[in-house]
Image (cartoon, rainbow, N blue to C red; front, side, top):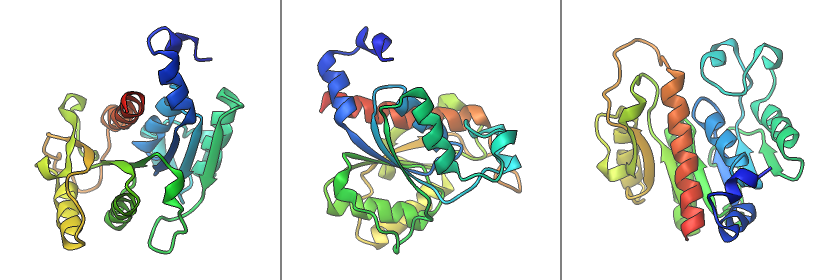
Length: 221
């Protein structure tokens, strides 16, 4: 299934992707597109963590949501989905709300991708990555954004116009953690609306940027 990849990547690069072990936390509006890109681009070992089930409100932006899986666990749906694309892929699906009580052996992973909403969960992943010298990239606030062209990869300390990133910077500094981690964030100021309105084009592009960054890092390391 990787014939087209071999046209643009070297065999060594494809082998690096096959051998890499990825942890993806959160498979919602951002994480679902990240997952899709990873499994179609050579990643064959991936752990996904999410506690949620599909709801009607997910249909506007979450890639694998449809009327037939409303009420089903997201990680279970994605595991089955991935195996229907590539039976050789190893998907470890963890149905869990990520917090300090979560039993995660971070040492098994080469790269951590944070696509969760919780500040505490983000701080936990950053802490675990720091303690175990693991690469990590984190998604900042993508809700209330309309312009995918305003999304970019930078480091947490260089973000602006993003309330979630501002709060995360404060929390990581308070906990003695580095704010130099890679992030995907939007330069666009959030749209003023009462609820967390989401536009699929923006959330999808954020997920693709996460995946692209990880894939390129693995190939060039």
